[in-house]
Image (cartoon, rainbow, N blue to C red):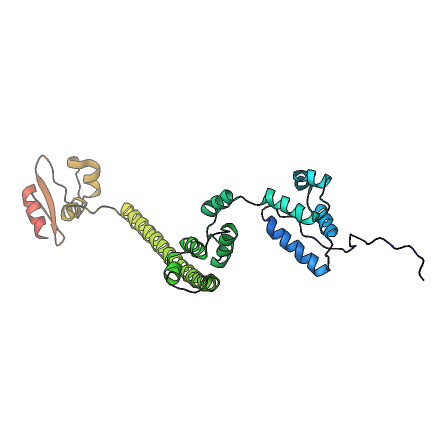
Length: 273
């Protein structure tokens, strides 16, 4: 007969569990994670679960439940602590509704991700209401495809993801084409500006043509002596078209012969050549 005294039953299991950091924004999700670790590790004792929670949350959380820590119930310690933490950090119905209306949008998320977010916030809503809220936040093309479908929301989410993927690819392709065309027009516009400037500079450098070319041609045919001495010149070198303002005479050279004629006669003869 064994005379050794009976050892008291151990109420806390010595099992190591890697608990994820507490998520204040999603406390219910954190407890689901924690309980999956308990299930994997085979932890069933209430006390073990209770002390794992205390060791896993930060001081700010513990300050909110200090009264429960100082005087825990005799039974169901874990459930009592879990319920208090959820009560403190889980959004109220009004807060969830406000977040659902103001912050729950598609953005860069997939439609299936948006649906899960809406379901999380719209607890207690019917599936038809959730579907209406979800569809109203999808692109118009996705709404057109899905609005008349009677498939369950899980199936509609898969279809919506595919529709948005195809639409996004088409938009990206159009954006690239538009960017290429825009760049081409910018290059063409730059070339036109450069050509316009070049033509403008050519016009500035170009000398204006004489209005009466035949007059300038004859006026330039003044010999050295008449240019220097004018009417007082005693010599004349051919060809020379100088006309004296006093005598109104000029010199006309024709086949190496010089003729002194009246100015009007010289001018008339000039028109013939």
